[in-house]
Length: 476
Image (cartoon, helix red, strand yellow):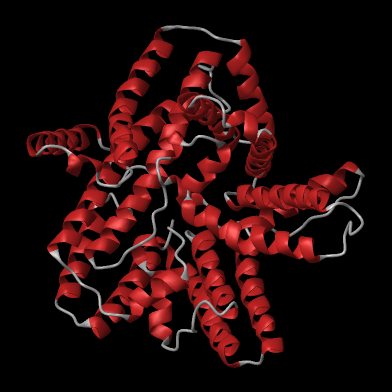
């Protein structure tokens, strides 16, 4: 049930009208049922996985809340083990089994592992991380355990952000589930704006950019040359941003209509002044999750360990920072998919972030717009690695991009389409960056506002690809 489909429109209108007629108690039950219907519409068999995470972390949270200090951590371990096991088996088992088989085959050892060969359960990377953050926060004393199972189940499965985030924290979202919510015209208007602009980003910009990207990144393409790879790489940078940011905006907008406030997931990342700033603006809910639940705890653990005790504090700080940064970014890359190109995407960004901190005093002296330009281009190299079919493919594309250029009719056609699609987004992002606020168009004069709304609507009717392409992050 895609956000940009007629089926979802009918689904949401029915849910919203019933929601308006219900009190808080029935609103939560309605949203829980709606969330399971929404998820079950993808594949009802995977509802058991969602329920397993929910039941596990509900009881782990309760036991953490009432256990003595020494026993609390064991329930955190149970939560992490169950959720990561589900994620590991369904997302990574086949990949690593295949890689291990190939590895031992080099030494003449033949094994025949059993492969699962199942479609990746949609949203599993998101809701497992969301429930892990809940049990960890309860353990840390930041959050009281939720006593009502159905309210906790709604926190885990809330349908606007269930399958592709934002990854909400219990400390932020559970209070909204447990308390009365206000549905008013102001929230509805802002929510509708988010849905409207998110749909435009997805159906017009992202999906039409995909038509430029997919043929060139196809390993069997016969039209490849350096210029086309160059255009397709920049097109993918815009596609993945508009696709994922568009989804997040629609999720934020749907939730806002019903009185919920979801966290901001993107903050104009292509205006970042360095690669560290990029990750503070890109997929904020995921990057902050890795910072708070992996990077910081690991860094503190190493700092308090006896490793290299005889060394200087500065040496230890630098070494542990680089090791933990590498491990965090490696796993963050691998989180995106079972492939070495995803892992190397993370490694690439760990090198860039580490390099930035080494050269910070020089980098920060560069003119602001040049910093933004360089950061964007460094990010685009990462997207080439990310979008490719593997490390060998990414190398071939990169080599092609810097060695073999040909300006032909197809290149010119691609360039024009890219610039046309990019221009509308660029103007909107510029306004938001200057205002440093969401809802950029609403700050313009009324006549200009309504003219733009009309133009966007016409463009969606004429060029929007509704219900055709899934959101990119559904595969992660």
